[in-house]
Length: 79
Image (cartoon, rainbow, N blue to C red; front, side, top):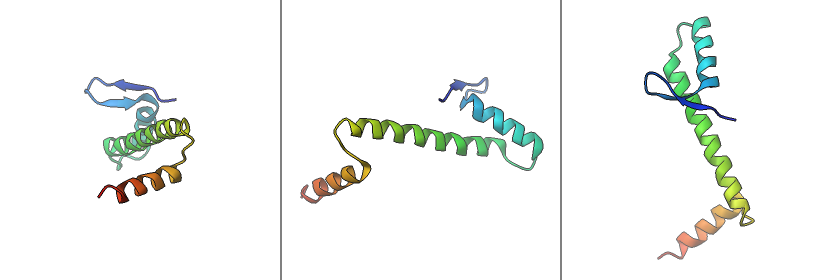
């Protein structure tokens, strides 16, 4: 599970991601640690939101494909 925290610099981070990026930056000084951490946090955020969406849709018996079809039908009839 994710453990989000606000650092002393005011940035929100996941402690496991921050620790991993810190270790990588020590081994590979050429990387941009902030850029790598941001990219990883965006991916984790996307995954967390997608998991929540799937859980919500499943209450209605929907899959991603069924939801996309319903949205397409709705938008087609919106005119």
